[in-house]
Length: 564
Image 1: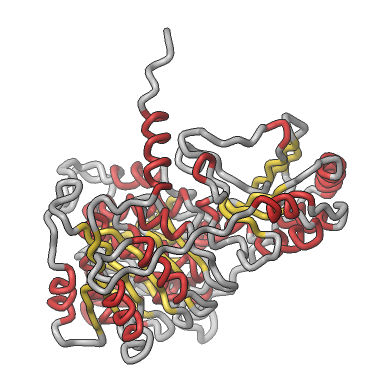
Image 2 (image 1 turned 180 degrees about the vertical axis):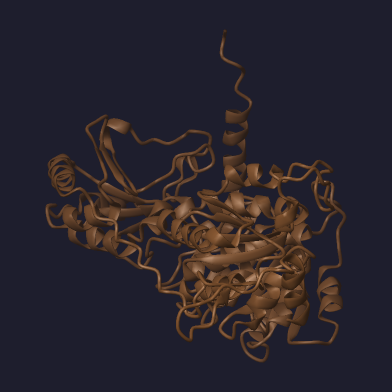
């Protein structure tokens, strides 16, 4: 802290600290930010140090209720904040100016698309350098410091550049409250010479936030419910499809109320898996266009609709967004919030179990993979059969994009067992770090492909340092390079990172028998360790859903240009 105080006095050598009424002691920007993070529920901040953020990091470390988790790179710090926000409702990361900010950008863009409130804090240039013609290190070599800001403007809902203490309090509080209200990431850049300087706007104990609750337009809500009830009570076999907007709307409980009251069959979109309870008696599986399992808040993009192969007809659907309800081709009701709408609608619907009964008549349970012979090579479907048996309400699943995502979609999640996924290779390593740090009562099971693992593998070391007890299944393609990556000795890599410090156990399995033994050890004698199980499978061992999905999405991607 001595260095921080010296930095502050150097920046303003002739300015005495402003007088503060009474006996109150003026606080600092750094402490105010630290207290605000604790107040909104952040206990861990994921960071990569750099010379522009060191003084700020000193203040975050000094906050007793805040734990600074140093990450191996900025991308993983951002992904960790993403995973943390999925568990605790909000996450935070701290990086340095431009070189750090641009490195974390992809993770913040992912949080934006997933509606996650992540506070991205960047240590910025000295406040005296703004408005000058100076070229600074860590920049692109121009005296314009706005490049990083311009990049973040498209992937955050609010941006604050704090280079003046007089309005720093307002900017920081506005940014954080906006992230919580919008459920989107925000960007806060703080000049490196400001965190340690006392200022009267930063009283020692920040006044707690009060964020006004969002309430539906009552007349619009009543009209939407009446129209929806009339529409649905005429339906023959209605089905409810839950999507990823349930999380941002905090509408999971209202969704279950609607499902119970209506008796409708319940399905989930792939991007919403883990948000809809699968133990419900009327749950029938995943709706995924042409690769579905044999309407409420969905996002129909080319991936979730499998190259636009959805069979839903718009005129027969009610689409419920976080703040809007559209019935068929119209009408549409704005400022009607999902939770309010679902709760009110549940009281107006007639019970209709026709779709559930029809499903039960035609449903054929999926076949179980055949047991492998003792020396038979391990198959992916056999591995996921055993992962299914591991799941409980005390576990959570992280699914990497690729074939792991497709196989995890087929898992039947027990009550209180969540599943998280996002379609950017390498996301799962950082997200696993963040989620496990936030949800210490859960044992995280991460399923990652070898190519994705190579993107972000370094932060396995941070998991070990934090004492996490995740089980990672790494699917290695055995027969030569795949997608032009070099095969690693993955267990040896993790053992090298472990280096005898902390609790870590690894195993390489090639048969079902070896897999069963490894799982038994991971869940018993190594239950308090990070467990890394490398599963060696054949390069052509791919789920049929991935092949079908890939074919249809490729077809959608290769459509010729429309005639001009």
